[in-house]
Length: 148
Length: 159
Image 1 (cartoon, rainbow over the protein chains, first blue to last red):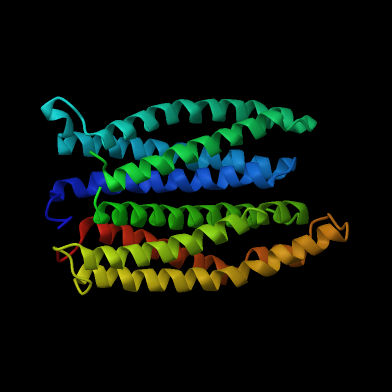
Image 2 (spheres, each protein chain N blue to C red):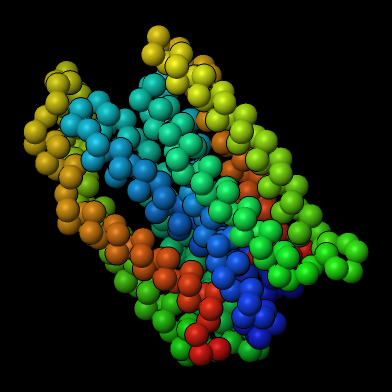
């Protein structure tokens, strides 16, 4: 049933979107875990930040490209208004981009300061990944359950 | 929202938990293979318990809610080819992932022992344990198997 209501032309864009989202969420889980288990250990915080930079950022870009590609193919907005689940996706994606950018900038500064033993900025950067992870869990639920 | 909507949402959340765990394990594997410092290996190993929880929740959730959904949906049968392919791939990926865990565990244990003993200099045995090719191969099989499940779920060959 699910396959019959989705045109085949959506398969590749949807795959790109879901794959990017999964990489993004996986990276966020690793970064958020690093924030919780580090207990001041700069090595763990560094692993978390590198995950944000080298896993979450590419994952986000792939997810966002796939989302726009799917949206344009599916023509969901053609009747004037988007379903709620699409709106949730856009809000969390756009705010998520902003938060991810802030986390990357703070973490970048934190990586420099960490050479002197200061871990505060790195920790704040990774705590933002916890917020992002929570937001994306809600988004995944909305994408699956599609409320209204 | 109907039951099937909830089942699909829980199936999807479980799939994300499973892949998130695989990404976390990949991060740890990359981190431990790039160093022979006991402190760095032990530090990366501290991420593993969360990954272990996520992989169990994700693996079980994805199969339970997936099969339940296949039974519940009118247009899908558990014996549809793409569903059977997904179940076989899930079994292969789960078993490969389960077998990769004990391959990396000795490296983490060795690193923790060295750190506890105050021996923080690079250790050749630790480097050898951390760069297990069998563990890496099993992890790659689990990752590729899971990626193929995603391909199968989206393209649904034969549906």
